[in-house]
Length: 123
Image 1 (cartoon, rainbow, N blue to C red):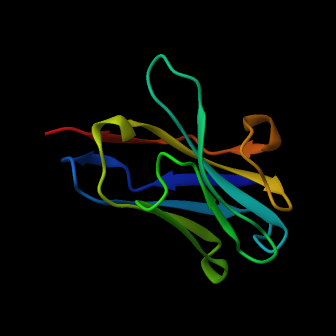
Image 2 (cartoon, rainbow, N blue to C red):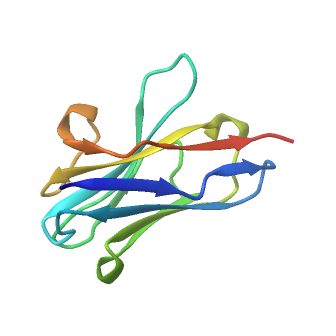
């Protein structure tokens, strides 16, 4: 059974950092990419970052490039999203999701989703 469980969200001041975790089970990170998405109230879900299955290549949305870093630990079946220099506009529920192969930036490219973790950036 495929499962993805996010954790690590919370309240942080602008300029602060958080590390989100996406614990996975029921499939191999060797074959499935992991994407991070976020959804703010009243807005559509947007792609943030992905790490591909084969070479572990990473990609980022322009809005987070240089501030966020995605990584994975295949032995722990876990993917991380290190978020630095957080801004109020980063406030959202963050979701991880899985897609076969390389993955992409489209919501519809992903088959399984976690339940989300809230990130709030506020003074």
